[in-house]
Image (cartoon, rainbow, N blue to C red):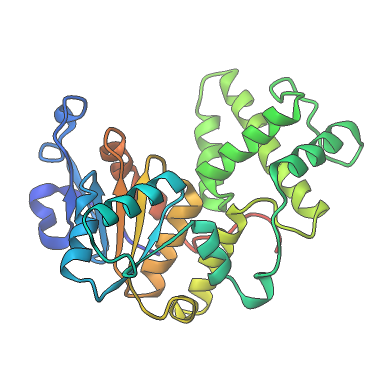
Length: 296
């Protein structure tokens, strides 16, 4: 587990390198006047400042870097800037986190496929119409498969179905005023129930996110040797274009930081970056990243 504490910026010293931009929208929350986060030495956060990625290529073109780009547009933009700057592209290896997750999962699990959204909607429709032990007939639960899938996806993104995050979610819901407390709990219980039912009804994985969760578990199980085997030349890992913080992606980076000495950079997007960087310690503060409440 990564121990994260909050300290005044002056006390953080060299433990942290946090780059932010002063903008009209967040100048009143400038990191110069708020708490900074003491993070692991090999985790560096950036808000904006994408050019530092290119600068590393320019000055250390012999070092190999794995760039996790959840959105293909960000990947193409960086590749375009490399071409425009006439910088070598072979020092950066671009990949989607789910692709990396497959390569870092146990070998016996790499051939497993994920069901797509159309199949999930069809399976959820069956849950709604068949008596299969999943109770979705509650006031706050929508009747349309698309809306139920959206609920499942949001809870997956926020919690990763990690037991500690789900417990925090439940505790937060219980502390809300009535009837919002009961409504929130119903929605959360429905998301967990649907995820559990989907896992039981298919030999595939429910979504690509599962590859990332399995990779996090395997990194800890193998003490990081699976990363070295899959990417033997990689000396640094960057997550780019971050406009949100899916729990599964945080858990993957958490596992890398805990199991290896590989430096990790996170590039937050402008506007939301300062807020997300302050929220990161809470997401990191879980044990056994990648763990879920369901039986394997």
